[in-house]
Length: 156
Image (cartoon, rainbow, N blue to C red):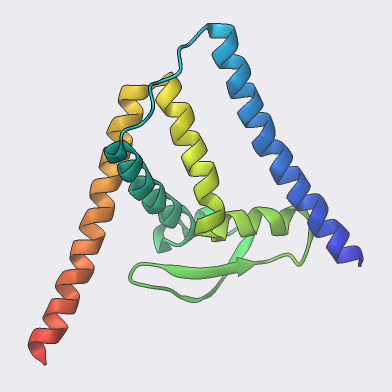
């Protein structure tokens, strides 16, 4: 039971930091009188989703970003091309919560989309540029995988 309480405390801390970030952003928007952007078009929603997926996988799975995760996670095994599967070093507490956030692309997506949303409010042109670049990178990844699959099929 003790580990469960420690894990819940870690999750509460992560959620509190997230909520504080969102509240601070809302306060900054209000205090600066910054207008909220118009509703996103379907293209922008799709591009943001693709970019968020790519950035989330870069942070949580890419072999080259393993040093970012190393303080709280260790390699469990190899993942897909250029990826690794990490697991938490700790069994409970804040360290486990952070490691789960940094090793789970679905968990990290929430933070990425939130950051991109904040970017659309405070730095829309820069955010669009980054989103478009990440979406293009995700497209390039899919083309690499499609090419490798086509190559295997052709070789028979």
